[in-house]
Length: 329
Image (cartoon, rainbow, N blue to C red):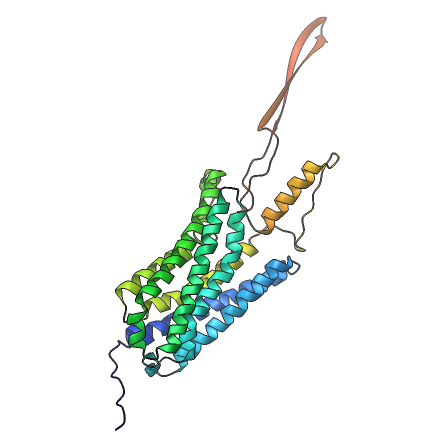
């Protein structure tokens, strides 16, 4: 007697339909990533090898992730009952893509100051935990063929994975935003439009990915028989790459990836050390405030001139005001 197939007790709209919509949005964001990649190659083709390797790894993983989600949507909805390899690989690919792209942001946070080093250590531990939990989910997906059994037996692992991803992103965003505020960036709010503020505080800091991961965590706990969280995760994976390219392409480096230092006096060791710190901050797009001279220097000169046999004093003032604007944001 042949075994009868398991009846479809999952909602098609909340599972296959949600994943399909998430894939469509993800493909749009993937096209944006390709455009940003072309712009990066055009502007920073001579970037340091470590950053170029990071960009290449991110785009390779993004391409594999996009192809995997398209393959899932290409299959019939019955794949939701008996998952195939593409659906089972999505958790590990999503976490790996996120971790690789967040390495640049973690390095950026590390360079903001000594106080951020401990936060970055915690962030790296969270990233390793996220990747490990995601790999466990993929392995269990290969071992447990029935998706209903998989969703119930891995609910706690999925929640822990989403929570660690949200915590890592929130800590990254908090470190960057705290640095901006500590260096006086809020004084420029009046002169900046909402678009610049949104890009600085939400996109470049990684706050958007933290919000998306919190949303995925809520959906994973409240809608366990739906793929709404998976759809959000697909979009989040694309946002990671776009965040990386947004930070990279907004740097103020020269087209050849170098900086030029001009000095009217002899260049000493302090000048070279300061130039190296500035170059590193510019390379990783770290918010910094350059060391300059005091804010205002006034020199009063009193002279006398003789007119019609009488001497009359004349006062002249010369002033110099230094620029303390925030750089590299």
